[in-house]
Image (cartoon, rainbow, N blue to C red; front, side, top):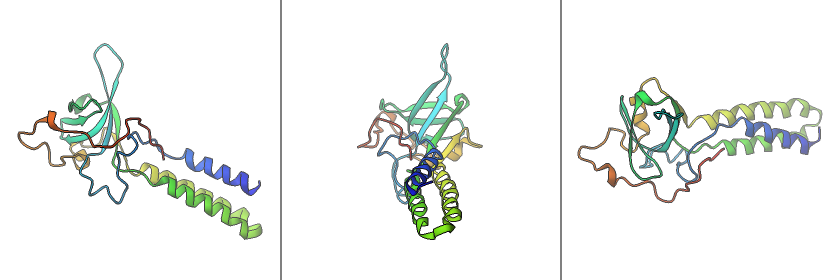
Length: 186
């Protein structure tokens, strides 16, 4: 296999190992900024609707308790979702750096050209390691729902200690400057 075909093959393998991140572009902070960001994680939950199939509610996680999730969707009105109604979903806490890992993997595979005949051992080693590392990195910021304990999601909310007393949910505004078009795949 030529080096170009190998690079294309490596890139395809690395990108297919990535997890889908449901947050809109520009919403999530990077891993190093996640602890200082004043906004909650992006959440996507599937809930039943009477007489229809399940519907999906997506938005910023405002607060979480053992029995309720407060989510701020694009509509701008905070929704209180009873946890007993959540069938599935996921929380995206920060932006994955899987693209960087995939890039370093591709560079590593290309660098094996200088290894001569050992390329037959070193290129697959780069591929295997890079695919595993990229896949792990793309899954790291995601939590699948339902969790073991709903209150554990509070750490990822805008108000991790619960809704402040007397807060007007209608006054909570979404994070400025986000693109509404979803799907930022690493």
